Length: 450
Image 1 (cartoon, rainbow, N blue to C red):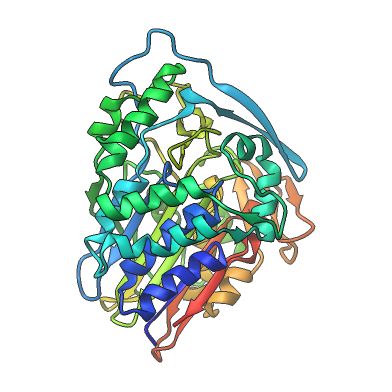
Image 2 (image 1 turned 45 degrees about the vertical axis):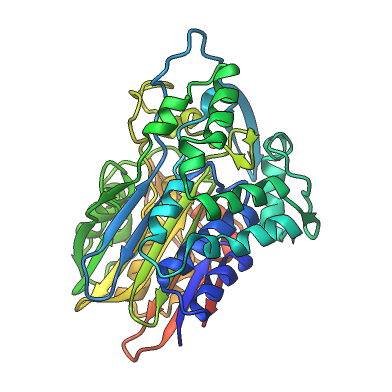
């Protein structure tokens, strides 16, 4: 076997698998998949998105690439445009999102892809090839992406998407051109060149803060992952200034061995998380035959509804969770807080489990439950992902069918497994050397073993 990949869309996973078949390592596969997700999961991520990648080479110290969103404002606007509120209805709940030019933060995806590629074997133009092909020739919208599009239909229209229903062919020629430019010229055009200038000038012309100065100053940060021990394993995850990894480690440290449901609820109550937002996020996990692991989570927020030069821009400055002190309270250049927590579990130096999740404030709880299912309960990866989940939001417990909570807290019972509980994509190396994975059916996840 050459490796395994789990991702949030079958075509995303297949793009990474193709790199593994061609002799690429886990990072090559993750970058190719990540760029393909910009095409196949266009309202969850994109070239105007941001994220984190955890790379754990076999027998070496893991490294975290932080290409998260950065607050703009180095060239302040005299009259900043108001954020545009939109209400999104899903299930039994509604959420208000804030979009438009003032919602756009400095993006990290192009810089993140180019930096990550230096840890792989393939040149960047090969890593963008599959993504560009799907963008230029089109792909069929699947069930989950059609559902996401139905939730965010006004943004889908304003961002220039042209296919909305399951089975329709979505063609994105401008995205193809941007991807090919990334492959040919690297990240520079998106930060100091003509694409950066087109984006910044359009945003500032319409009252947003993202300027040429903000894009020129953007850099990927390399960080040492957080580390915690559990069940004799080393768990590596996203460090500050992101919040998610720290919350996950607090939860793990609060757990006894073989935790009960009550133990898990108490662990989730230890740190306080943010609002129960929809969470327009996607995750990719890869493990190759040499033992290199790569875990990457990216997000576009809800998307700003603005697409320029093939770059669908994020709305991170309009996400309430990311600005707890109020909108526009961040200093220019601040990395925005995040719950994203790409995670790798190693055992005696070798990668055993690669995972992460979509789902905003539910990310840490989803990862925690899957970790416990595999490490404490001995479940195979797919069973661990499929198992019913719960989420503690404040003093309220949300549960999927199959869980009978032993609690005095108020409980919301979902009638079926739901995307609310995240999208956890997992790859596992068993003690016998077998590679297997778990794709989260809540968000149409897919696994490919090569």
